[in-house]
Image (cartoon, rainbow, N blue to C red):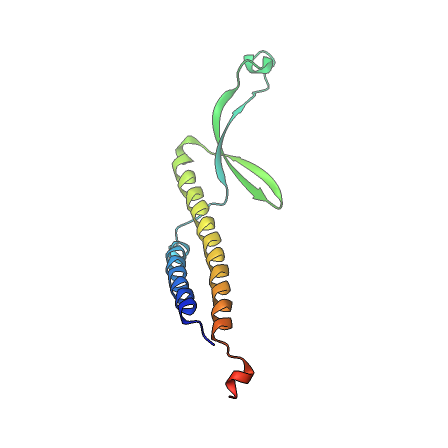
Length: 131
């Protein structure tokens, strides 16, 4: 027997989740260029024996790098000041894309759970079907 109040609750919940998913899918479909990695700033030691950074007094920088994974290893690529704005923009696009992707996956799981619950609520017992 169908529990109509619970079924209506599940249907409304599914509609809400599908609307949320549509928003995140819109982010995925935007087509903005992506750059895999994160922009980081680091201070460096120059390696000159007479420099005060060799004694640990200070380091040079900060210098901007793109940190990314390549074949399981973390790589760092120097970012020139003239390129910094574009690299930050593209890396932020990548971060937003990955976040949207994770949200779609999470919502799909929730939708599947609700689908299973709705199926259980709507399925009648075989004895009930033949009575």
